[in-house]
Image (cartoon, rainbow, N blue to C red):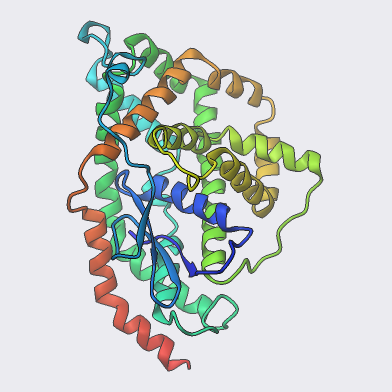
Length: 357
């Protein structure tokens, strides 16, 4: 699945780390499985990111290659629990399904993320084919709508599979007591408000990352970025840092990169902080409204995040991502659906571009 494209520059664009983080986060939120990310550079300097190698000029950048588990890993905190200490499969599946919905669902996928690469690839050698071109936005909408129509069934079909994959990973790693505490919280009035808060926060975060990705792939942000006071910016960043996406991504990326070495390894904390800063400016007013709406609940939400049950859950999720990253990537239904959609529409997309020249 191709996510991001841009011309190679002699030096890094100051927004490049944020764009990279956007690609990883959006892949985590919408991709069917946990796969490697490859940086691909064409002979004319076009850079794209994919979940499969794309020739001799491809470089694997995420997740890092993960060796088989060591003896320490298999006896540590994430080692499988005895069967007697585990929750029932039904309760674990309920928990996994809840966790999947907290971070947003496939139904809310913004297809502009997938459409913008196809739009850019229509004319990779045209220096004027970018967001400032008056035909860019109209054709982006057409491609996004075509992809949405073709890919929505595949996204719906994958939701249950993703919940089962998560349940299979969490079941052996969480105690019955942890699962019971988590489910009790989510079923409580406070827990229901927490879920609603997290779903809206996830939508704002994903919208911001989509806006950043589309803007950078199109040659730069088209809308002005807010310049709040430092205090207001800090408050927005704290809100974003407590999103389930941020908590889960930080844990998951730490797991898959735990064995990575070398100077090329990104400082994930710095990248995540940079991403939060950009989103806090792009979607600031929405974050301010959300913070105001749930202000009285936020201390209790924070206490929930610090609870032993949540710490165990995040640790188990990180181990599950690491485990999924080791699986061989076979034919992916979503990837196949995406390729079929591109084959079906690419000629008409190209014709629309050429007709306006």
